[in-house]
Image (cartoon, rainbow, N blue to C red):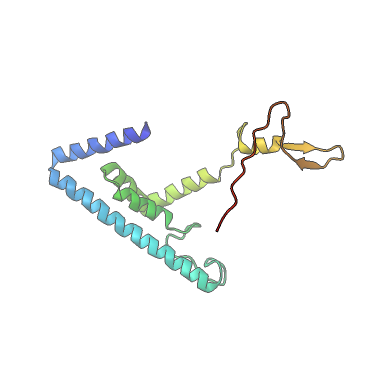
Length: 171
């Protein structure tokens, strides 16, 4: 539902701009967005590749005391995630996605987005009831001596399905 609403917003914005200016202006805006977005992604990719090569040659983390300080925005992460996301948003056709892409590339708003995202991702949630961790915890059996033995329940009240026999491999 959200994707459909986003598409309607993008189409509506493109028609508003086309009515205010011309269809050629909209076409030029879309082409410029693809070109600028491609340039931004290429530049961020090169920076990431250079960091990887430097860390491999240096034998470890480039942010370590013996290594060089990380380049880029100086944040704790690699510094390439937001530019790549911004470039991708610029490459998507539409004016709202272009605006969001530019917000990712503009340093003050980029840092704000990065801090909010890190805070959102670092927030610890309790696993919901019925989650995989809950099922794993229930699959444990406790022995009388206090040891925990992992196991599975095998029900013997119904017929067991026949095992599938794979044909031998011939070479």
